[in-house]
Image 1 (cartoon, each protein chain N blue to C red):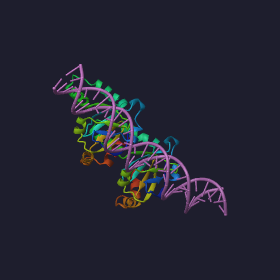
Image 2: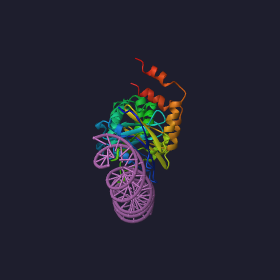
Image 3: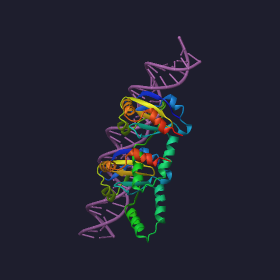
Image 4: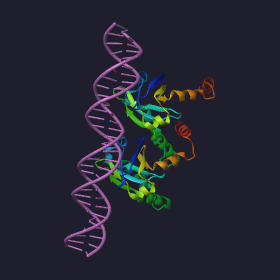
Length: 145
Length: 145
DNA sequence: GAACTATTCACCACTTTTCCCCACTACTCC
DNA sequence: GGAGTAGTGGGGAAAAGTGGTGAATAGTTC
């Protein structure tokens, strides 16, 4: 499980290092390979290959001849990109994702259980400060039982 | 499984390169051969031969004496065309499909799990912007379990 | 049936991008 | 304090994408 936050930079080629502390939690099955895709918020989701395969299994159960299902398959795979870490433990983020998540030089990397999220720090701050339920309120609702 | 998006061009002869990242996911069984046909949206569907064979099995189970089945069989077969990649990993798109998908110089190639889709970028944009459920909404619905 | 024309298809060549590897600095942990 | 690990940057070789030329095939006309 991935945990923690890290402030890293994206280099001129669009590469990001996977923090060493997160790297230790990547299963060997992942083969040092990650799938990046559009997050459901304004961020990039990064899944180790083994985790992504669980998502793909769900996608494969959809019916590609059903228009709504097909649209979702397109939307999610359009931004999905595979890459293997280089010898310096970096992966290359595709341009479309950088644009989508409004990534600039600095990024905030978050460990989020089964995936890793990459944010523009400013955007993350705005997201957290959005008026809405507080941490306590959400916790109370989500963590019942 | 095919994933990702690629902006490529069609040359004057109607040829399209299969992106290298997609090529890596084509099974050797496909023998570098693809079947192109009309997509269910305004696009061209490209199946590696081995995947197409699964589609054909399903078509064979339809009842050719049922008018709806028969019509679908005609429509999909009418546009189905086979081609093998040349030494530069390109395939030739038949004119009728180019016209159907309104393809011009620029194309958007999408990896869509078991098939590859080819779109006119403008048409794809219109399609995605069609009012409908958002990415977040669909994701929440489809990926629950 | 032969010759000419038109279209198709395989191969060659060039340019750009990608990706792999090497190097440097800073920080951490013995 | 020193060794090792982590993060950042860049250069060069290899591959990928695009365009075009020429041979082969097929089709048509005389």
